[in-house]
Image (cartoon, one colour):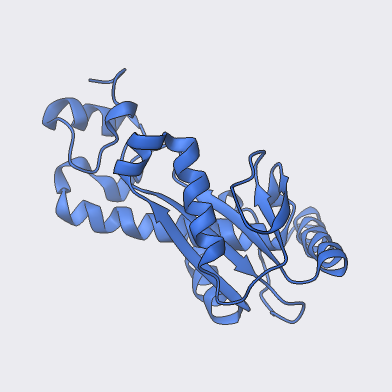
Length: 206
């Protein structure tokens, strides 16, 4: 493994250690699926302990699909607490995608079996939580806890889109996961939208 990768991952663990020393029990929070043309938006909240023993946590975008799947299982087994939550396509259409992502993150934090005192949230917008916290831009590459949340949210959403592909095979959701690829846009024009497409996202395509 490259030295810069090892150093970055150690820095992420050190970042969390510092937050834990200041705030006590805290959760990392991230979302997945703000950009796609179809499907729910997902979020996850994760509480890690010093002794969680999960190695290789990193920004989900820097990991292979195989490694994400392995960590998905390991995080759920070893985290002190975790929760995956969603906001539906109907909610996305009603309150817009940003607010729906905030709602999914709020649900994930509130669904934790342990009550954190603090939350680290990826990005620059903080959801309406009952606990204190802070946003961390590029948090999934800064905090091990946010990275764990990003992996849970990403893999859970990928699984969900694979399930949707069984219901709507003509759209090839298992390949593009609902994102606006050339293939997806061509299939949309051929078949029209499905019940899980986000109408407000399709105006420039259809």
